[in-house]
Amino acid sequence: MTRRSVLGAGGLLAFLLLWEAIARSGLIEATLLPAPSRLPATFFSEVSLGFWHAMVFASLNHYLIGLVSGSVLGVIVGGSVALFPTVDATQSWLARLLRPIPPLAWIPFAIIWFGISETAAAFIIAIGVFWINYFTAYAAVRAVDPDLVELAASFGHRSLGARLRKVILPAAAPGILSGLRAGLGQGWMTVVAAELFGITGIGQRMNEAAGLLATEVVIVYMLTIALLYGVSDMIFVAVQNRVLRWQR
Amino acid sequence: MAAIVELKDIAATFPGAAQPVFADIDMAVERGEFVIVVGASGAGKSTLLRVIAGLLEPSAGHIAHDIEKRPDRREIAMVFQEARLMPWRKVADNVALGLEGLDVSKSERDRRIADALRLVGLADFGDRWAHELSGGQRQRVGIARGLAVDPDLLLMDEPFGALDAITRQTLQDELLRIWNETGKSILFVTHDIDEAVYLGDRVLLLGGAPARIVRNYEVGAPRPRSREGEEVGRVGAQVKADLSSLFDQGGGI
Ligand SMILES: Nc1ncnc2c1ncn2[C@@H]1O[C@H](COP(=O)(O)OP(=O)(O)OP(=O)(O)O)[C@@H](O)[C@H]1O
Ligand SMILES: [Mg+2]
Image 1 (cartoon, rainbow over the protein chains, first blue to last red):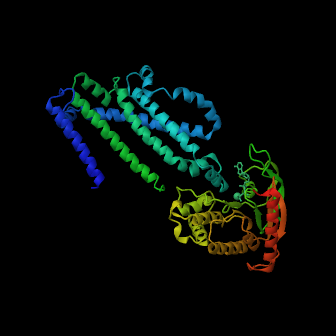
Image 2 (cartoon, rainbow over the protein chains, first blue to last red):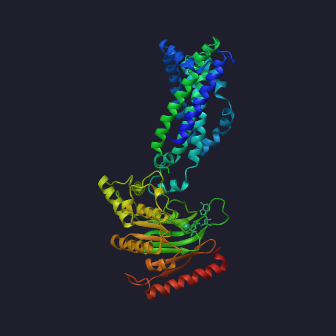
Image 3 (cartoon, rainbow over the protein chains, first blue to last red):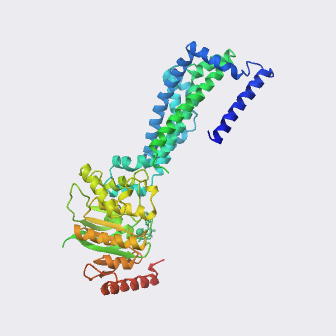
């Protein structure tokens, strides 16, 4: 183990001990701050009652649908805007108008359009993810070295398809991938917020538990989100490193 | 001999520029000819090659290519002034760029890549990433990429600029050998007058603002040439003298 990971583990342990000590000291009421030692039992009861996997599954479902559709659309629209000046000019004011609207501000319309449904949650997630990918894909495609585009043209790769395949996509890949990764995180943030409005999932279960002051249940799901985010980010970084192994 | 490419009254103007980079350019490269272009920095040599390669529309004039199209080779290949390697491709895949889209079998393709890399002294470097090469090695990959497509007309923009004297001489002789064996036509830009008169059948001097072809020198020396040959030395001295008087007239910086 490196010195860095020893210190990291030590810091985490110290935090948990301090938390446990404060919770046990009675200074703070147990419902306001449940002791971490109570969490494993809470977790197992959530699992045995069947809530945990049902909620995780529901949230993952919204998350993945929203993430994939928002990412795909964001990259395609952002990339096209960067490639075609006419498209860019046509949408520039529209993008300026819509962009500042926070994803959660779409909740009323999401519910009016789709009801309290999976689709509504996925829609809200997709909006947040869309804008992140729109901007990073736009910047990444704009930054492609025109000399390399000219190089490809001089060796016969002149059509839009050839340009995309031979130069633009590989050159923009680092930027696009970092946008996808940022969207991955943004998606987890909106998934919970969207579910607070009653769409089945982790957020809804947290809201329920908070209403009953079952704060240890809330914390179990907070940690669940951290875990899911951590795992998905780790998987993504592994894929990213593989795709970008040409970078120094 | 028929011209492989012929330029008539060609001018090039960049958008927003007050005057063209060059104008009234009349020149031709005959089939199998080795033509050199010299001129001060900024004179328009790279721009001229881009126009001939079809990468830049001339603002005036007419350009005629007479090259038979063949499915397994490219008519024109350009060796750019900068290496212009794709960092996401291994060296061999960079050399393969122009072969993609040509009708060559996998084995033929691999053979051509290996040959081209061997010619530039990088036989063992195919599996490296571009950023793992030195500047001169990167430039040589750019040369290999141009050679691999077996072009009829090879446009070379200061291809040996970043190389040490010995490597440069070796590659000059390799290029002469390829030219001799394949009958390619070559248009070659350089700042090195000794290189120009050693390699070229003719040397074109580009100068003025807008630039024109100020002079056309025939290098009559028979081949194989000696670098210290009398004719080579005489033409070289003439080109150097004209370049510096052009520079004094304000054609330079
Ligand atoms: N893309 C461009 N846009 C505007 N001006 C350009 C562009 N490329 C070149 N120029 C200008 O055109 C002129 C000729 O440039 P060019 O690159 O052809 O010169 P060169 O003779 O190759 O010089 P060097 O020997 O330094 O390579 C220069 O004044 C340059 O500033
Ligand atoms: Mg140049």
